[in-house]
Amino acid sequence: MYPKSDIIGSFQFRLKAAEKELELFRSGEKYIRMKEQMQAEFRAYERIIANLKKELADAHIGTAKIRRIWMEALDECLKDCEKRIKACQAEYKRMEKKLVRTEQKLDEARDALREWRRKFYEASCELEQEKEKNRKLWAQINQNHENSSIPSSQEGPRKKKIANSREKTGRKPGGQPGHPGHRRPKYTPTSEPVLLPPPEDVRNDPDFRKTKRTLVRQVVGIRMLLDVTEYRADVYYNSKTGEHRHAAFPDGVTNDVNYDGSIKAFLLLLNQDCCTSIDKSRKFLSDLTGGRLNISKGMVSRLSHEFAIRSRKELRRVFADLLLSPVLQIDCTNARESSKSRFVYICAAPEGPALYSARRKKGHEGVKGTVAEDYQGTLVHDHDTTFYSYGSAHQECLAHILRYLKASIENEPDRQWNKAMRSLLQEMIHYRNGLPDHEAGDPQTVADFERRFRSILDQAKQEYEDIPASDYYRDGFNLYRRMKKDPDSYLLFLHDPAVPFNNNLSERLLRCYKRKQAQAVSFRSFESLEDLCDCMSMLFLMRKNGETNLFNRVSAMFG
Image 1 (cartoon, rainbow, N blue to C red):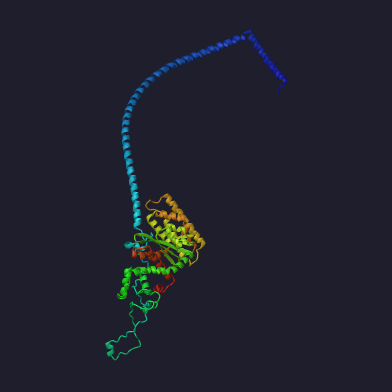
Image 2 (cartoon, rainbow, N blue to C red; image 1 turned 30 degrees about the vertical axis):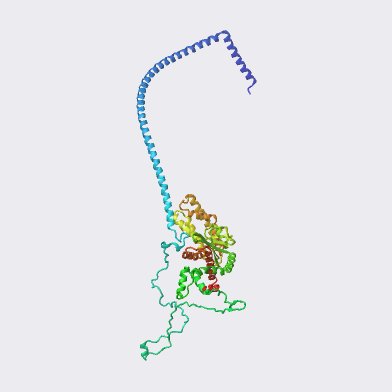
């Protein structure tokens, strides 16, 4: 802080200066000085204003000159602009007319283009449809036993020739040098041997001597002899009662002429098992007996019914055995009764008997009464959805699946899932065939097969989402959907060694019926079809039981 004396001194100086200035104001001298100063400044400002006014006047003059020049230039520009505007307007009108004409032509071109696009689209759609129809027709034409359910026997002249994979050795056909050969067996003579006399030159030449060696050659033939046994019984008359009596004839001897089991078995096997017609069977038997034995057509036609009645007890036992079988193979085929469609079902155990069943309808109505109706084991069948309602587990026939996959490969060459699935199924079947009998596969290998199976199904799903299936060929897509719906029914054979991977047994048995159907063409009654099924079931059972002589067995049943 400043000292108090300095502050007081400062105020004193300021007070003296204020008093002096006050004296000047009181005397008027201050006002005079201020007025003179103001007038001097006023004159200075007047000079400045005069100069500014002069400059402003000069500026106005220059501005007017510039405005005049500018207006002249502007007038020229306006005139030029007007000319250009008129020229532009004329050009605009010309271009507008040209644009209108161009737009009209463009609209016409667009209409024409739209029409061509519509025609092109229609033609493309029609071409695509024709391609799909063509693909469908080719798929139908190229169907054979390798890519469909058509049996090889129905292919006719287009039947594919089976390739011979054996390597040529260059040797001549027949027996090879050094091989002992397979000689015909010799039979016991049925008559006295015929001793051939020596040649005449040998008899007349004393140098020839008889040796201990004898050449034996046989001529084997057959002939049928009628074995007729005649029973005679004297008739006695009672004069008191008027009663006639005679000795009782043996069982089965009821008519004037009766045929034993040998003739019935011969005709039954010839007609039913060898699939010859009734007329041919009768004619053949008549020819064998030199025309002495002529059987009526009615008797031959009744043999199936008689044999079926005699087989019922045995077939009921077979029915019970099939119900207890852990695996059952089932299939169905068409039949004809007059002008009506009928069906034949086959139920067979892989290691056991089989039963043929005639049915008037297919589906669940056809399954009624067969073994499959109450069966609780594993069913092996084709892709008939009816069979999925029966049994506890199911195995699809992979032989059919491989054919369908081959057809899909031929008709959908751009897809990859069908090739991968067919290769995988062949690998699984090869693995299963390489296992010992009744031995399950390795769990890790089976799990890997299942994983790859489902992975291929996912691949198929993606392919059909990217490129949908054609409306004219959907077999591949339908096969994928079936496999996706129940994949376990295609892999059960890997887990259970008792389950076969195909349904070939039932198909082979149905083929036996098909041969009879081809010979008979149509049955006159449904009962005759039922009798045929019972006969075929019994004959198959006899063969399965190892009957060495089927003729003797059937003869015994008739006897």
